[in-house]
Image (cartoon, rainbow, N blue to C red; front, side):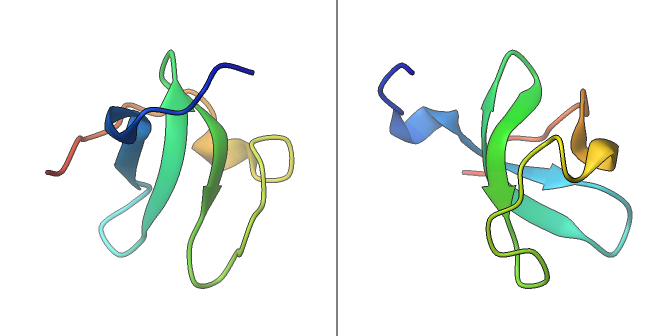
Length: 57
C-alpha cells in the first residue's frame, strides 16, 4: 500500500446527519471510521463504496 499523505484524508457525507473521516483513493474508502464504527472497511459497510466525497480543509 502506498504511503498515506495528509491530503488523502477526507470527510465523506453519507446523508444529512452522518459524516465520516477516512482515507480515500480513487473515490472509494481504503478505510474510514467514525464514532459508531471505529475501524470498519468498505467491505463491511457497502454504503460507503464509490461515494462522491467532499474535501474539508
